[in-house]
Amino acid sequence: MTQFSEFTDLCIQIESIPGSLEMTDVFAEFLKNIDDDELAVSCYMVMGEIFPAWTGKKLGLGPNLLFSALSKAAGISLDQIKALLRETGDIGETTYRALCADKKSQSTFSSFFDTEDGGDGSCSAGGRLSIREVYDRLKEIADASGKGAQSQKIKSLQYLFSESSPIESKYISRIALEELRIGIGEGIVRDSIAKAFDVPVAQVEFAFMVTNDLGEVAAASKKGGVDALSHQHIQVNRPVKMMLAQVTNSIEGAFAELNEAAIEWKFDGARLQIHKNGNDISLFTRRLENVTNSMPDVVKAVLEAVTAENAVLDGEAVAIDESGKPRPFQDILRRFRRKYDVENTSRDIPISVKLFDLLYVDGVSYIEKPLIERRKKLSEIIKPGANGISVDDLEITNDPEVAAEIYRQAIAAGHEGIMIKNPNSPYSPGKRGKNWLKKKPVMDTLDLVVIGGEWGSGKRKNKIGSYVLACYDNVKNVYLEIGRVGTGLSDELLDALTEQFSELIEVENGVTLKIKPEVVFEIAFEEIQKSPNYPAGYALRFPRLISVREDKTIEEIDTLEKIERMYQGQKE
Ligand code: AMP
Image (tube, rainbow, N blue to C red; front, side, top):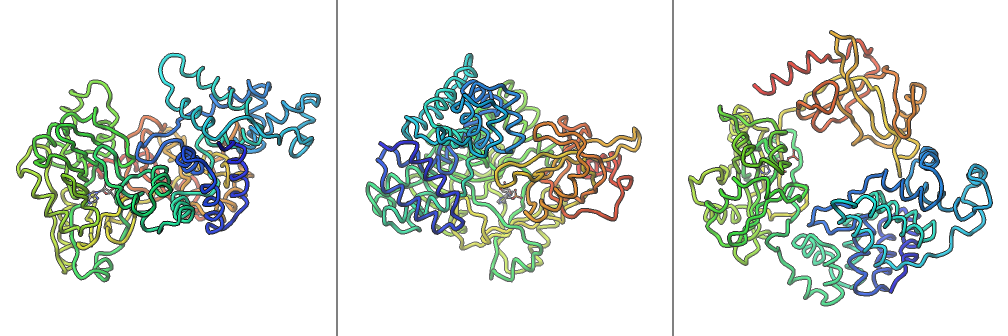
């Protein structure tokens, strides 16, 4: 049995390592030395997860619950916890300091925080819990639901904090809030498993692709080596990660690397992976959430159209209006999220599924077979003319002009563009490679003013990690929030922006900042959506910072009127 203190030491050690090779060595060594029933949970927890990837499940604990538990465990007020959070910007460090303060009870709270680490060594003693005990408690917290669940979660967390040392609690808090981020992702865990149990990385990768569960792969590697790994297979009702596409800027460019390409419309919908096990159908989203109960119409269509007994199919769920044009993306999300009154919503927003790939049929895995073969089989097992489900059109060509014509047709039909696929490529779950390329029109941009922000955490500590954006309502002469941008900003840019904005902070409330409107961002996005969540009444899908428009004043930014026009134009 391994103590959680050893897992904590592992985290501390890994955090101090810059290179992934050394991290792999360290984690491989750890895996070698733990018990069989600790293997899987260590693989999940080192990535800051509790559940294997295929479940699509997250721990889902709100920060306030954790603050309450910490406040109780440490015997300090919520306000003091929040003050600490403002100071450290990190939940782990806050937990550590709060619990050290508790341990060093003779000193006052404020004098305690004058010292860096709480000083007297009482905070570094090991706790009483094993890895499994911590894992099982966290899982219990994740699974608790219904009446009394909140207080149960607080109690469980409080228990974890009281049975662990402050340094262990630091990592427990970070796992509980899904903020462990010590630098280990799936790739390093995969390589560590290979190294620990002396099996080829490619074999581990294959087993991971089909099972979508690194914990299970680790256990199989230890138990049966290469032989056990090669016997792993796709399981019906367990979602596989979806293959993803890279952007290509030009059709010609895409053809430069391919003799022939398979061209399909890029439908404007949402990804759907369909599992059929006899009469039992399951539907999964791109994030591997199970949405079967929200889509009885799709379940019916699959039962009618798919002739194979068992199958795993990949496609896009598209909602079409009376005129045959795709409806806005959020209509499909409404369908996915619907839990009640499902029948009526199905009638209001009918879905049509466009199938474009196949991973498994009646005991045979297809992921390693070339796309053309997968497509041939797909056409064989789908009845043509079925209601609400069909195999999409695919054209194999070596002529960029043919692809350009299909592109024009897709855009004219209101879809996003085309997919340019390598006809000989396998299906690579979870990979965003060159075998699937997407060609879409150039993104639109808007000039928006920054009116707020949020302090980052972890690596982004002491930096403003995301920015609140507003457009101008020239009728009411106010700035209206329309969304946030935070992803895709380099560390250098974040530093420069943080410095630039530090002068403009008006109110600082926790990590939330109100910023004097002064700086204009040029923002690219994929679509404007109606949204009740923002005062502007609209939101941007996939916003990305293109540049800081030093040359623009805030009076020159885009207006609500223009955004309304763009939204209408988009619909037409
Ligand atoms: P993106 O979301 O822009 O990364 O584009 C990839 C997504 O396009 C996939 O995840 C699918 O949901 C969607 N898509 C639409 N049509 C197709 C198609 N014919 N082949 C593959 N993906 C498609």
